[in-house]
Length: 168
Image (cartoon, rainbow, N blue to C red; front, side, top):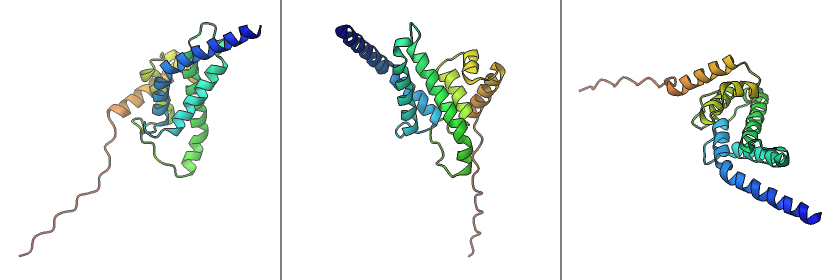
């Protein structure tokens, strides 16, 4: 009996290690896009990844043919959404470092929907179900976020001072 449990645990560990080797990079990139952190300094994204992988490992034996990547992505998205929504009021209340990633100009919900729809290729209906939103709302937010990325507002520039007239 003990040998069987040890064998099962070893197989489980090997399967999970193989999954992590194949999926961790993509999940980390998705988390980095969500948190709008730079790729070389992304502690929040790494924490999201670690929590997502821990949850996936804890659920590994209960997957029964389900896609572990899908489970990890769902947990990552849900964890980000929960943290972003709760932190949103706190962010407005205190000065916080501006995000530096490519999606920095988007609100957390826009980043989440854009990453799920465009980067991860999750269907509109699945995204809506995951976030508890109507599909039309997901479509609208995705279109708005895409437009904001493709056509960012012009940055305000300082007025150029007039050159002083030369006196001779």
